[in-house]
Length: 188
Image 1 (spheres, rainbow, N blue to C red):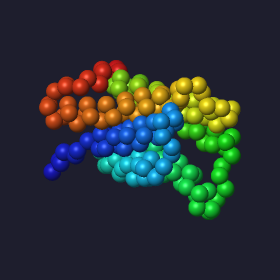
Image 2 (tube, rainbow, N blue to C red):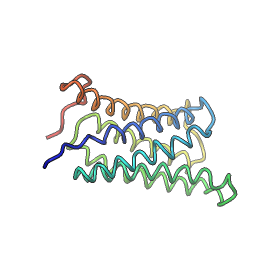
Image 3 (cartoon, rainbow, N blue to C red):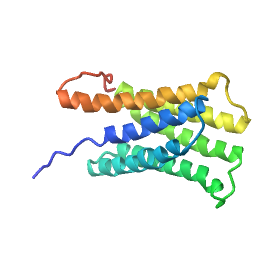
Image 4 (tube, rainbow, N blue to C red):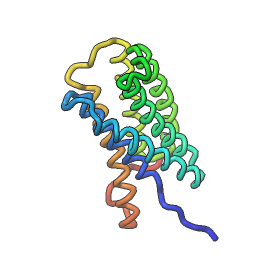
């Protein structure tokens, strides 16, 4: 019996998108980093994306599995890096080490962006803007300076917002059985 499986991508995209927007509202200078962002990072950005990735595995989607589980564990790792020093359990990583960490995620994301070239435009926007975001964050950590005007935070808000848009487009378009929110053509 062939059972139709639900699409786990909107769950993963919302977990990524909402958490990314919240962290980058902080990065843009609007409010301090606090428990709300950390909790979102652990549970919605982290755990929910890992669950979505496992469900993508069940559907046979290697790209979805790799993206959602990787970024889910990115969020869990990032929150852990932030809270372990506060708990006195580890030293805070030096800025250059964080630059390396973020730079590696940028390289990974650039390769994942290549994979989106066979996907819809909305997914390309998410991964393209995320590659830029990791580059900006790595630069800020390596250089020790914040870019003017909170540009990194604003870019992150755009990136997260684009993931929220795609998540809702997939849910709404499926529910209506037609394109209500366009996501762009799938590249041939």
